[in-house]
Image (cartoon, rainbow, N blue to C red; front, side, top):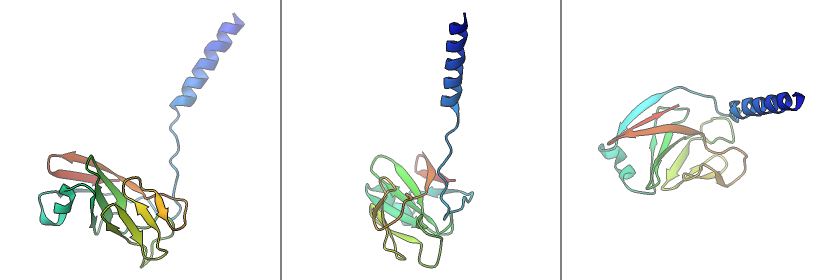
Length: 141
């Protein structure tokens, strides 16, 4: 009888442990900012996003703007401020097709994965949520 109680208790505790929300890795350099913006892919400024491996920088949202990337399969959005140092005058990254680069330290990131590909740092790009409804993209944090 004690063995059954022990096994039941162990299963319950393991289940609770598995259901625990995993803590997000917090980046000390970038604060969380709330926003939600909708862009129309039919507008000329977003036309590059109709073709695979293209990206666009959207100003005045997020911290230093948002880089939207179309991989050919899905749309991805990232904070345009380099995640490996505090925002500054030179920390806004500039997209070039499927990578982006920071002028402060020449860090370069993949827009496919958000990972650092050149330079130094331990944080990947800060990703934002993207949902698509026809020709409209909603980007939010």
